[in-house]
Length: 258
Image (cartoon, rainbow, N blue to C red; front, side, top):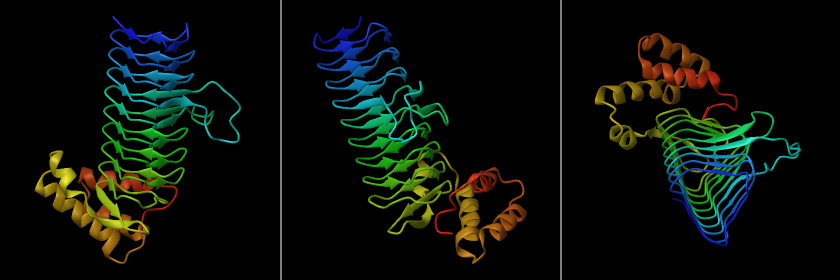
């Protein structure tokens, strides 16, 4: 049974699952789907095109699937996906996609803290944390297990690799390769994300291998092309080295610190 506060306004065409709580003065628009077990707090607005998964918590004042802040957007029908078990805290905002990709995607088990923002056409992987007031520009891509520190602005079209942690209060203007810490102003490579990787089951051997890979990329005075060639030759059968190389190959804004 759903618990809908009498002051909430829910469009007759919105599709709600079971065991959903909707708080006071919340507005749920047309063309919205909300799956089972979601808890939606007071003064939330969920706009057209939202597709909310199971067991999602959306706290007071959040705005989901609003129109993109994009000059070329002309009210085309696009979507905004929020994965299962995600928590969206107070006054966080997510915009739906433009026709370029048709969707914004926030994965499963994501934590968006207060006042954080995910812009149009972003892709946020599973198990990411976006801390208070972090702002992700349009078309930003976060792979899984990324942590973005508080008040961090991420430039549009940036890619951030899996298991990366970005320090608080610094801007991201280039692509950040996987498994590392990035900190300081201007942002730079600050070693492996050793604590996070160990928590997620990476072995000492894997960490040692990644340290050698990043020594080649950042500490050997080689340019990116030369570093790629050396990593390929030195780690021909290493799957983690291959992930680093694959990320470098799909980078368009250039690598952090290079």
